[in-house]
Length: 223
Ligand SMILES: N[C@@H](CCC(=O)N[C@@H](CS)C(=O)NCC(=O)O)C(=O)O
Image (cartoon, rainbow, N blue to C red; front, side, top):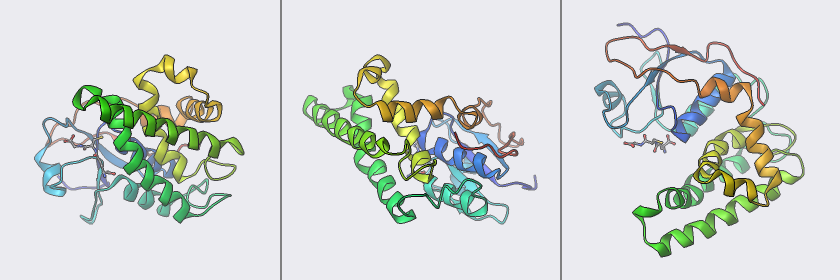
């Protein structure tokens, strides 16, 4: 079958895939979405990207983008209608530094908070303390303008929100009781947005040899 659109291998609940879909949807960069089962990865995905993680974007010319942040940058460099790459405060390198700490420091803690049974009690206690520190810092950073880098949503807001959402979903009543009003409001605004609804739509699992649905044909505004 000839490839007429970029192909996005995706998994609905994966925070990395969510951030990639956010940028693609916002940029209106139409692609063929292939919803995969992480326990039974299609050969086409492994052929394109042997590391076997999602998201993976295969461009029409065969180039493969296999890191979520690179998918975001690719989409936004093609079309960035609300200036996610040019925040009103701070710079792209500042945003990339925060995203790196999210993907390293916070993700490490998040995994231990989410699956405590897989780790020792000491590791979990440590991770919980790290997560609280990180989230309190984000709350502080959001206090002035409601977004991480100035007046509007940016690459950093969109790259981090799926991970903060995962943390919030571990224990929603505990999340609601935390003293982080700016962080809670920031997360909720996104969850209530049209963009969130677009990227969290449910698609049937991709059947190899068939064409997946077209994703991101419209272009959806920031929250
Ligand atoms: N650094 C990668 C991480 C992607 C990642 O770890 N995705 C997870 C799903 S949330 C995955 O595909 N894991 C492979 C597996 O579970 O087999 C990125 O930013 O795209």
